[in-house]
Length: 390
Image (cartoon, rainbow, N blue to C red; front, top):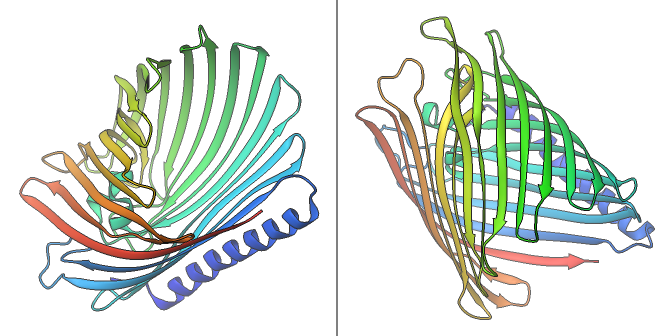
């Protein structure tokens, strides 16, 4: 199930090189600049036990694993108008039996330049290499092939113009590539998207706007798909502790069905909403969305998702967190909607100034077709070391 040694070696080398280069660059710039800079480095050691970590329907699936993770982060002030932020993660996971080992990681580099009080230009580049159990509800693709690793590369740029204190107009564009090494069910997909949005602050509590987006997606060796959407947006603070937002509109899609080998064009509703409650020591957010997303199956898939996140600090030393996410989509060639669900409860306890104990338990479930259900419990206990240099 693990990737071949050459692939693992290439992936490991790439992630380690990116992480070390970014960390060295961050320390160098922090030392050279007179402006305020912060560099943070965290290390995690985790032990995991699961009865079915890859959500398969095979026998003898239970196993344990040991994981090592490093997370560098840098917030740099290059000059009074320019900020550079970097966050990264490099992880190595070794299973005790059957599944072998995996290298995972993420990197996120953002550059923002404020030309003047009216104009801001920004760019962002991200890379992610994820396991199914870590990102099950990020995409419906994981309901199709739970043994795969997903590699994603995303590059974006945006220009924000504020003609006055209450109005902002933003234009952005991006390129994205999804790759599934070793998968025979999901294909490499590339997508381009362009957007234009305008927002107006009507009061201290209410901001409204409109946005338009165009996405072009191409599956390697397959057909092109496209999506155009137009939405109205609103963000409102209801009180000192309550706030929320909504996005409602319509999307026009041209999709390709790889099973029937036909094209389908139609207009459908899309939208998203969130509602959050944040009193002292607690934060809770409920969110939901419906619309088309870039996918390794056919280029685009229409998905519905709903989720909740809760975090509560119970004392100076302890914090409890819980989350649950559900995602559903009707996939071509399947007689029922594919579904994925993930939930977890965890506790974070500060042992010493920079040392934390982090036990947690998670429940995962996927349904690719009617009558085919696979689920798993994952028990994890970890030790986290967090430190900063500024």
